Length: 252
Image 1: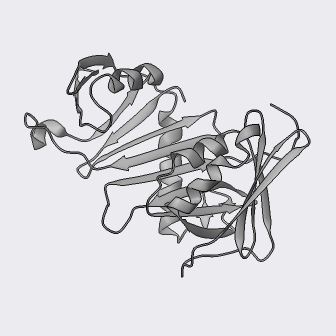
Image 2: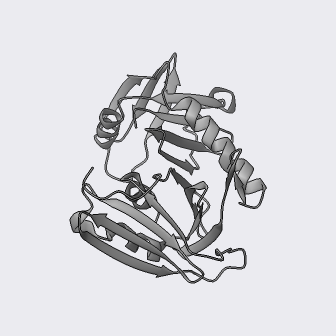
């Protein structure tokens, strides 16, 4: 993705972005207000960060992995301060992701309010299944040797989700049974949908603790959302992946 949109609220910060109109990811987290910040100076709103690879590399140089950093915004300049270094970078004045981010966040919120049945103006989820996050992480290594240039299939029936990785004449299937849950809905008939490379990126960003919920259908994108463990409400992640119209072999 070209840029990342940060939405700041009283409760925390949400980072979200879109790519090629086929992939969406958002992550919410609490944050601590620095000693020099006040409630008035914190404010609410959105900012956009471009040059993501450069930005992340600079953040990595600010301190050890997992250490805290402080982020300030002043006159469209983002200043990041860490244990080892400080840097500044301008915000993006016309982010390509912003309109898409606002639209998708709106669709996700509306779907949740409607018990995860509709999506958008015409989409409808045919199933809602869930897994322990640690088990779900196993899917991301499916067909690791052939993932470059492969296509991906999600098949959901009344017992399990099957992820298939296909490249040319090679195909690998991995089946994962659902975790028991009262609010799950499985399809009457198996639902089979094909995806491109963004599917694996979506799997890789999901956390390894808590519960993973998967919503999908023949006329809807694939929504994967993370529910944090009961003792940790610090983070939350959502991904949305547009399906392919049909299967196609080969390496694209």
